[in-house]
Image 1 (cartoon, rainbow, N blue to C red):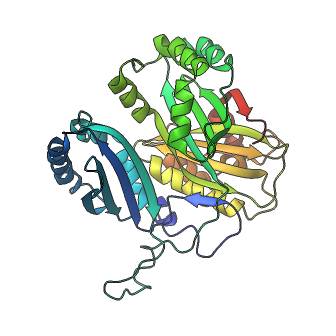
Image 2: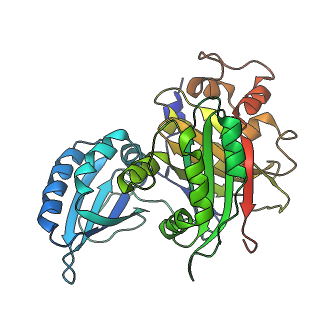
Length: 380
């Protein structure tokens, strides 16, 4: 009998697909590039902080190597590259409280950072590689994108304040979607599930520039200040360190996205929140990714677009559904056609028993998040 971890192992794609698809679950090696702008005169302090961090990171599972480089043109500019066995162990570390504590010594000497993550597709030089033995180490084929970057933020509010928070979050003027000549906001979808808020955004261009643009808009700043008293995690937006820690913990990265070849402009958008069992968030996200990848090839599937966001045991699936969620097959809507897998990785039932007949439809209802607002830019 195979376990869930065995069933979800292996690359998701083996050949070039014309449809839009991105995933962290290819099993290929990951290259992380961190661009760092250090305060003038703080280079030695930065180097000492990096060496301390480097020694700690070396023991993180999945870490292979790293390299520190300093610009020959501007000594304040540094480049850190690291290699990981695959994306999931890196994401598990970079989104952890351990990482928040590890990088704290860098804050006083770093003006700005920019992180870029890449799957390794091809490489040259070095000893010959046995491609059969090494097939999971390089991305099997290039994926096709649509120029859209997807990201989400999530946080919780104090129980009892949900209705007030939903009204505040719904009643705001949309910021200017144009960030600069190359970047614009395409869509913002905001949902709530109990006291958890999820704000999913779609950006064409530079995600970091878009996030900074939005945070500076008066209408957005007013909303953020208005919900501050209701947040479970305190923050002070006037304190850069407090704001940085809050948004670091709130980041909910997209780990998988797929768009079916057939599309329908009338498709309705929904979000589902999956109650992962402790420690099962990444496995659950990977299983959902595999199912959505397969469903994208099935013309009978009502799910035309799916994005999976995951951090620790928070797993959210954003889907565009033809014909509405209520009319969809519960197994396809939930993305988990195998009831046993649903029971093994989630806590809908409170135990590990497989759901009974008809319970998948109930699970869809339990997972369904309440839509607060869904806004597109006019030319998105």
